Amino acid sequence: MFWTVIHRVVDKAGNVVELEESGSSNTSSTSNLHDDAEEGCEVFGNFFLSEGCFHYLEAWLDFSSLPKTQHDQYLSFAGELYEVLNSREEGRVHGVGILPYIDYDGIENTMEQYQEQIADNLIIPKYTSASIRKKESSEKILESIIRDCRSWMFCAPDMWPIANNDFPLNYTLSTFPLAAAASDMLALLPSDILLEIVQISDTLVTYFALARTSKWLYNALTDPLLLNRNLRAMANSPSGCLFWVKPVNSMTGELKKGYNAVSTFLLNVGTGTDIGMVSKEVTTLVPFDHIDFPWYYFVQRCFESDSMMNRKRIWGQVKQFENVWRDYRENGWEVDRFSVPLV
Image (cartoon, rainbow, N blue to C red):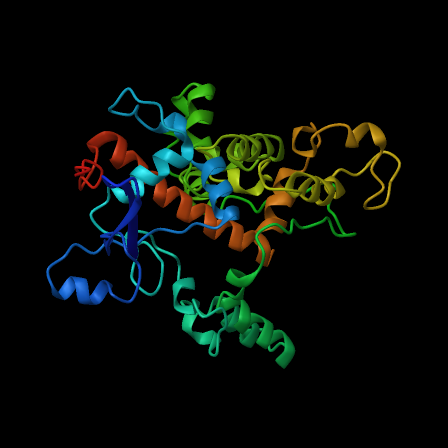
């Protein structure tokens, strides 16, 4: 990025004289970066963040888990974000705009905003293989191929699922999968400590893997009431692995949009009210706070939603950036780009 400074001075005759000074910035993201690099100059690209990602980053960073800053100066969120990014040794990748220390899960390969080949994002053909084994129709197999190629990365991350008409009022999970149960040493822990342990699981995969360590623990953690309680805790805490399922207040219209969809999961069980016909008494509450909210079924529907899977992907990037923020607060600047003399 080129810069120009115009100095206006008054000469002895009283005339205003303009003196122009120009040069190039070491935070340039123009095509001259490569020329500067060849000349041995420092190359560091400017960082750009969309409004949506900015709000998600601000809402999803778990600041309570981060250490305090090493200086006494107060910085706003935007101010500290600027310092975190510009104090890193590596800037954004030239021509792409991504940060080299963040895993974007393959979407960086489609920066042109279109995709000619869906197979570029294929990792494991899980659903395609299942469709072929079931001898499903060609249309179903195509849907499975698109899902395996993670087309959900191109969906807007703010379309919450709604309850189907076959919404199950009661559910039970499968029985303990192992014939020989391991020892129940975790049963010796106080229940409150055990709940703290399971509620900080980094993923649901971890939660159910822990549950399978013993028959007693599996029966306890898959009990509908306890499972609902644990899923609620995972969604209510910024450190929980399901915090991303809730709308972000700073995103315009997201609360209303999310609550309208989520309210369809609150059925009037006693009178058999149809989907969407929720009583006024229920709608006065935040749907997630309702005592009868079916967390297990709702989370299951989220994992079936393309939009929610893309939201989960963005959440994963925020958690990666949280580690970068933590390193900044613990170790300070990697490179000093701020103590530049003014003359």
